[in-house]
Image (cartoon, rainbow over all chains, first blue to last red; front, side, top):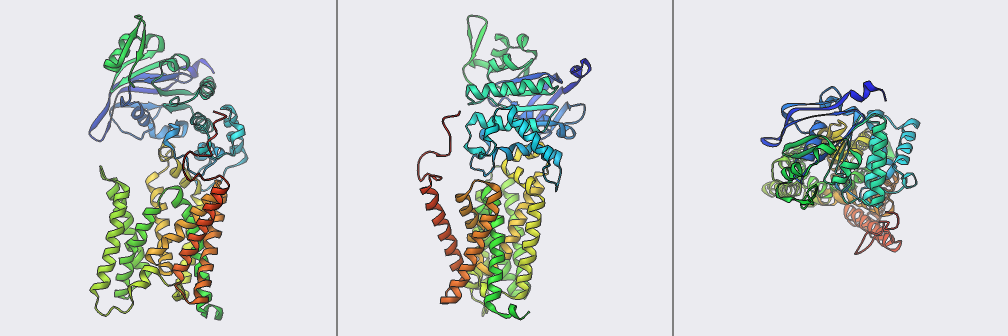
Length: 256
Length: 281
């Protein structure tokens, strides 16, 4: 990655306010994520983390201010953006195999009325290998554990070769093996120059995987380098009464 | 085309066509969990068919227009805040059927009795009915092949489909329209009440046999054709209702597949999902 690329802003929030109809969800967000960097969205449930991800995808309107994705509007940037939903939001009974799910990441490149090529199948196999699930390719998606399903969905995003990766609570209820595999795959994507936005309420994930943190609870309570932003004071402000202080410098969030 | 002059031959061809159509479309109906919606659609076409019969118009046209109204009503109502798709569907189902009954009962000396519309009569299909069913089957299969991967993504992960920019509302409408024309093409043969058997049953049976999407379509189509032909065969042999015979064969196929699935340990009658693998977490 060249110095030039690393300075390119993949995501710009410019006094952005987001609303569902007349109900404001997020107000006045400001910040920048550069290519090759990862930002953690941290805040309690209902804080608007998923809504921000949907706004970056162009699925929820920005009512004031601006969200710029890869130098253009969210809707126009979709081709280069990949979204990883929470695995447990998908029907585990759906008759679809692991490799079919990963192939869905290629649909945009394949285009309407066309069938997957050999190159698409290679990309699928490589993506599955990257998350360590090659041997599960032919299994039905719903037969895998929660953590493995989350890895399959990340493989789907990898197969799309995104420049911006959005992950919605990927570590919820995920076992240690899968968490490790997810973090490794995210690190590879970052090295390849992709920007990553990951919502989580696991503060250790933010320390492990993210260069920056955005503290959210309808408003922005901080956006910047992880060590500088994840302070007890800011966490208390973000979580209200649900943050407990330990020995003055550590914070436990008691309710997410 | 003298062989088409035979009532039984026409019935067999019609049965085979609606068997394939119902089986293939049913795979999407089952995957999207739309059997109840399909049920509502079959009942929603009923008043349209009655109106068309009263006015001397084409029955398919009447059923098609009313089915489309049901699709629109359900979509609009379920998109309204706080309303649920199942409730909208239930109202469309009972409302559509009630309207059909009212129309039939209000018409003095209505020549055809209610039974033909509710349970159908595959032995009464004309050559033009056959042509319509064949055209519908060809168009539906073409649409499903052309838009297969997009319909799959919308069915499996609707938000993910929107996230890559697929027109979700258009694709949803295409699928509902495909189900609708399938219903309209099948109702004359199986009737408003029994059509749902041939759209839901073969696909549900196939689902008990395999998890693989690529195999679901051919298996469901074969189950649909075999049940439809067996129903017509039994019906002509012993002079019993054809539509009901077809529906009974579908029920039998599902029952056998279900027992087979339980015996093979694929389906747990009660308790946990045997497919989950606790070893490799």
